[in-house]
Length: 635
Image (cartoon, rainbow, N blue to C red; front, side, top):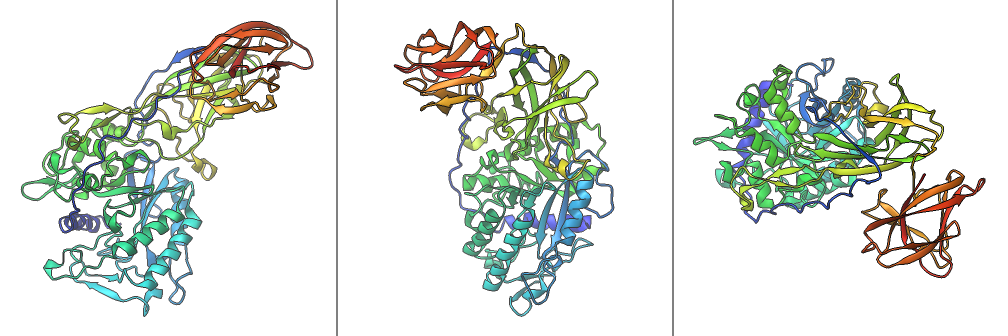
């Protein structure tokens, strides 16, 4: 990558904005706050965890450095992303067949990047003023020759294809479909900028744009044709995150889709007097600034589901964080840019020269994207058989984690060896930022002002300790980076906790695994190992420990909890019932007082006999309805 060329490119990118300012519309306003999470199970002991600074090279956030074949991708300031440009003509190499694709140049970058434990972010273009030094300036596929008219750009000395050509549109739709079929969900890829259209693939052709008063024609595709390409990308990529330059390109075709934005002039100020090209006009931004456009489209809350990327403007990369957080000169208020754009990642080539201990840079990186802390773990200090483990996770970043990576619980023995693991259904994407910054346009208070948004999200999972030898262990938790299946060097998603371990496991606290004598053991009613007869069914339950309950027990329908140790047992039944009900528990009649509603938990304890051989607790009522059951706890 020719860095000086890039600087000129981005400088030109900012100029385009002034030529096509979107019509103003009402901002969306503050996003609705997510529903509160379930409360921790009161039957579990609380184990507070100590917070610590989050890692600087956590996956899929922070800085991205340019790909250079053979170069050390982990040199310089810690990071986990590598950025790559590719010319379309380097993939569509055939002069006679637009449906022939040579993916080797992309595959080589992805393989090399994965070898360093990083994920890639890429963009494919057709026009790049001056080229990159290793990729061409004009990357129009040779199969377009004679089929697609070309447009001369004398300002940038490049050639644009006719983006409204039916031949081009058909070829690009087919390419996008093949692109997605090959790479959607590839663990080596973190983000894809949709590219293809305009200078540097940034979806603008300034000064050959909609402002034709300067005598130059408009080279951009019509909104309808641009929308075809947006729809093709959205159809082809269902897993890998997509980003596009502006919210108003192609008539706003991306705004109703799960496609994020990509601010290629992040937090720069230009002109006289200086105006920002990221922050809105209310905070000193230009009429064409990225967030002004976003407010005009009413999509300022798109970050809740779609990633926000971009590039720190090259002219300020070397010195920007000397002025953190407020900015100075051409550097705008960096903290406000990160917070209001909800930026997860940014191209920042000159971050390679930042000292790893720079506190200002560290503060910015930890604020970007997600920054997850486990505040408390919940489990019994002594456990055996079936037991539950819960965690409470908060996010002090500005965005959620956008991928459905698996969270795994484990037990480490005294030698530090993981002896058993359990994958959970926990969804980290639901851990939204605890606070968000208000736009002045929301009229929510003087800037800066913040509002509560996310919660310390509570997750709980039931595990079976059968076969685990008695002794002392440590509960641990980790998040599986899918890149680990490809590269042993894959960087681990780590938590901002003092007990976060280098191998990816987070220490949750010590537990003694015993034989079960005198130790309460929890059995979730909805567990797959149990037996339901008649019309008894599993239903979702926000108040329940496992997020579900079993209802419609009685009138011939039964719930049979299997695997309970034989003998005389104290059984606590956690139930929900808006009215008084009765049930037979292993043949013994038990009364259940109303809990207040079908969403409110109560409990009652009874002593029952569990027969050897059967090892079951059966809840039934042959003549009426029993309450809904969350779980039973057996001692």
